[in-house]
Image (tube, rainbow, N blue to C red):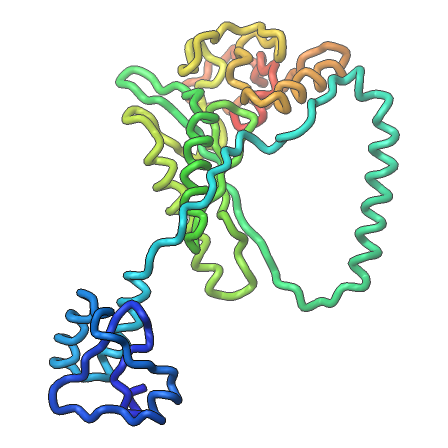
Length: 318
């Protein structure tokens, strides 16, 4: 615009007044860049501010500023309709193990057929599609006091609050997605849109991880933290959980002697998974026996393996 001698902004949000003594642009120059004179009534505060800048810096600089200012002062987009997402499984009821037995052959057969069909379709596709990838981070929600750290069973509550806020800010370029985990004390976070195949996408990884942690921290209570632990050291030992009224072990789902059913996410998918694994084993609980790490504090007569890990919760993020 400046090279054509057109010190006018073509946006309808603001109106630029040329500085005193400047030559008015020719009608042909105005037409070539789509500039149309605006009526005096369309002047705004933005216009007055830009006019002062023009007097100081010149028309060309003001023209660029006008475009930026217009973008900043543009009316906000209407708020999207909020849809609360409770969990991954939204339709249907999980089947108990006895009810699923007569459907297993159908699932296996059609699973193979669908895989072969998708493989055949992929043979006709062009190989110019984008590389899309991502990452996931699982956070443990802990409540820390002066005496003890416990798992906080507020994972579903925190995840629903984060998902609602993400919906309200879905128009932003960078965002987060929050998913339920087996453990009620856990939250899983991923980027809201996948990374691409460019070198610039590598810089998004750490930036999005920082964004996820900031947003998660904003929903925690003052005495809660969200470390990314492989396992919670005190899981299953004494009074190790908080945030639920019923913390008694030997519940109807896990039948564990040390872990209450309350530590399982309330979505029926996870409870059904736990019960079905026990039913498939003939009603017997899992019995994990990892080797014991021996250090200077380990008693000499301690078993070489750790006993008592009789629930799936020990292996799913515990």
